[in-house]
Image (cartoon, rainbow, N blue to C red; front, side, top):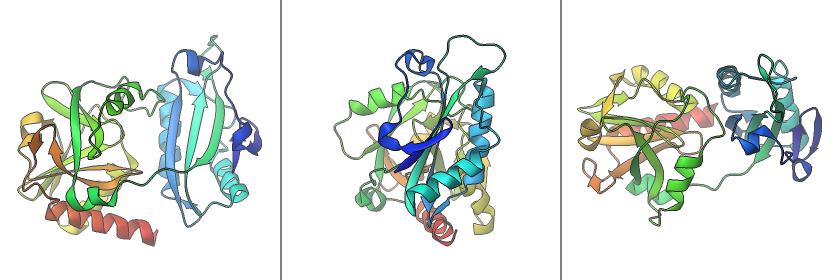
Length: 271
């Protein structure tokens, strides 16, 4: 596999980050991640727009900000990618900062393990933790809380950690949360990363005749929802049938979730 190493195309195995890098010593960097399907980035233009937005929020710039589309296309071509995932990082290495902080750009293909198909048939479990991500509108490299808490979970049905502030739910560590109540879909509006899959779901719902709203999602409504699901690049539309020790709805993936998942997968395969 060939990746982009801040100006040159090299085998991924040879690409490295200096141990003195600010990105390592302070956990500081912008990150983006998307799927390659049929040799094309799945809604890649939206992912690259979000990557640029994340860099702006994090006060980062690279020497290649206006070349991202061409770099992604070249990595896909050189690696002969058909079905894979692509990661992009903007990582600052120097402590000094004058205006926007200079960062190095890394783009490389990767493979991701598939989620157990049984989770889509029977539903996944989420565990909640009180936590608010810093600058949630930016997709940063700071995944420590979610990774730490996920490493403590032995139950294979636990697919992710769900963040809340003690009153309302925000997002999972690697996705967006949706609740279904009385046939209508609700998803948190504020203090969340604007997921690309989340956006596609919200665009699909009107044509499907499904009412929806972006609003506060209370813990009470979460636990009392008829259905829950999580959206993300790797999970796509993953039904959730348990949160902590509470079963959701019937305890099985609900009809609205299944309908949305079917429509999303149709969109993906027809892209």
